[in-house]
Structure formats: structure tokens, C-alpha cells
Image (cartoon, rainbow, N blue to C red; front, side):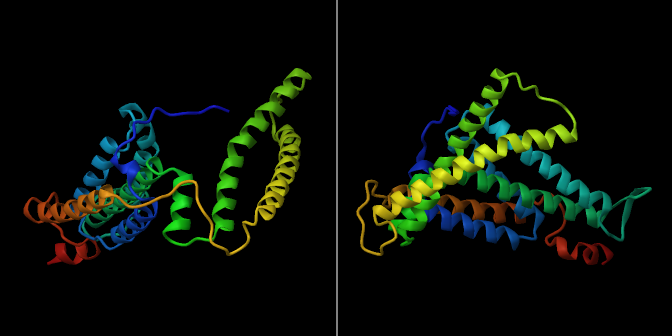
Length: 272
């Protein structure tokens, strides 16, 4: 199955994958400790700018990638806004109870999930799996038997899609009709899953034997076809996030969107 996206390589693609992985893990963790909603909004904007203009994808693809996470942002924030607890009631109707505290906490939760999504998309869209595993072996000393096993598993995913299409087309040629209903669904699931599972087991066994024959299980030093190193672009991404975090906090202090600095104590602040 051929499925390719139009990608223009940018400086984000040239960053060392191991460094990028560690950096983004630190950024993920740092978002959990941001309780200033103004700071978090600016942080989200900085992450979106990196995602929108430096991942190398056309704007229409960026919008399509963003759509599911915008829905997550809306659903996450509204769930807290409509049903969260609070003291200062803004509007109430039945089970829906919007308070000043739940509003700010809902927005904070929504922007936090959106920031996670933007950082994760930026990493996944600018990092090739093969380069990542080669970097993990060379920089972080991951054992080759684990790295090559993951790469082989990733390679099997498109092959399984191709086999699914082959089985589906073979059934259509033989006149097997796609019927509706829960009973027919499980029967069709069985017809597809058994051939796919058996083929996957055979292919996995052949790959395991081949890896064992090529001594991927040994701990001896190996040579690599792809040599992954460090470059000036690694410094660029570190500087970008350092500057982005600094200005996000600085602008949040000078020009706050909301008159709160910590959503954990928003109820106490308003009571005072």
C-alpha cells in the first residue's frame, strides 16, 4: 500500500533523534508543572509555531493533523468547565454548572492537552523511525537486538495492510458479500484475522531466525550503515525552546490574558 505525504525537509529533521527524544520528554514533563494559564497559553503558541512552520508539511496537512487535537482540546476543557467544582457560579442549568474556578481550570487542562499534542506531532512528523533507532544504538547504547526488532515490527505494519487488501479483494472475486449485523461482523472478523495472524507468525519466525543467524543477539561491537551524529541544528532547537519559555513567561507577567497566576488556588484568590 503506497501512502506518502509531501514533505519538505527542514532543520528539525536534521536534529539528532536521541537528543530530540530526550528534549521533548523534558518538555512533556515541564508542562505538568505549569499552573499559570497565561504562561501555558504562550507556551502553546510557541509550540504551534514550531509545528505549523517548521515540520515541512503543507498547511492543509497541518490543519488535518491538528483537527483531532482541537476536538480533544474542546472536549477536555468543556468537560471541566461544565461539570467542575467551584464557588463563584456563573451559570447553572440542570447538571451543567459553570463556575469561575471551573472555567479557568478547564481552559488550563485544555491548553495542557493541546501542548502535549503539538509537541508529540512535531516530534513524530520530523523524526524517521530508522534514524531514531540508529541514534538510540549509537548515542544511548541501545542493544541492536531490541532496536532492529522494533524496526522489523514497524516494517510489518504496511505489509499487514497490503495483505488485508489482498484478502478483501480475493473475497470479493469469489463473491463473498459484506453483510451487516453483529453476527456477520464477527464472522468476517474471523475470516480476516486468522489468515493475517498466521502470516504474521510465519513472517516473524523467519525474521527471528534471520536475526539470530546474523548474530543480532550478540553483545559484540557492530558497524552501522547510517552514522548518526550531532550538528548545529541540535543547538538551534535547544535555543528555540529556551527563548520560547523565557518570552512565554515574560509576556505572561507583562500582558496576562487572565488575572490569575495559579489555577490550583483560583478559588482562594477570588474569595480574597
